[in-house]
Length: 370
Image (cartoon, rainbow, N blue to C red):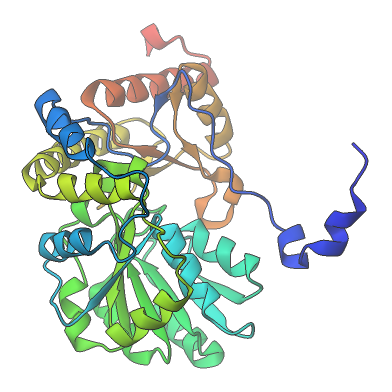
């Protein structure tokens, strides 16, 4: 195809240099690559949900402030009235809003490896992004390096995923407190996996004026709704609201999320099932020769494979109809690493069998003889 000369002349260099975020085609696979809740809803709950949508006025714009949903979220997460809440089309949109509000010379900082959109959106906007490597032995925060980077770069925004993606671990809360106190800008605690962690900084909003806590309903079991939210100072949220697109949360999402969050018991039960399976899968992974699973407080497990075998194992598992995430191409601390989402017991069993088969194939051993 002949290059279009308009492309290079119109688009910013930051955009031209980027690669698009790729989502693997999961059709026909057991899908364990995207940290989704594998469980659906019982039929009676679906019936009640559909009844709430029946009279949705699709000919009208949605409530621009999503007032009913905001109040439901406030009650669900016990967010005090003194803090404002902003909704986004997924937490990705909130990250984008935060970064769009910064001046072009601003610096952004996050532990690395971390959620890819922190860097992706910073690069897209031409900001100065700094990924501070985690400790190699534990994926913990390198506090001296982080504090040094804060003093040197004075970042306008610091992102900390809690638990971290893609490593799954909870960082030391005392270290996070030190970062919040040292920061001259905003500190965003990204709690996308809070349902599985039994840990949160939401109650600490009262202690720090520069702290915001961000969450999503995606991992809880509502990924298809694309709803994220952030809580914090009304003054800070007010500035973000200036650049938030009007009507960014559609009517069907507002009604569906409001309905779902009032059925907390169902999601609590599903979360408990996922956590129980997480423990079982982790134990079985660590029982496989050459595999080392890292501790996880999320709904996925990062595990290290034998040296230089991650790509082959990923391909071998995929060939057996199970799709997980290959993190080896990212290199650095993630070299030789794969990540698997916790699915149903049957899905997890299929993954473990596929992993054993793939290892056997690489070793030249028939699965039945292992």
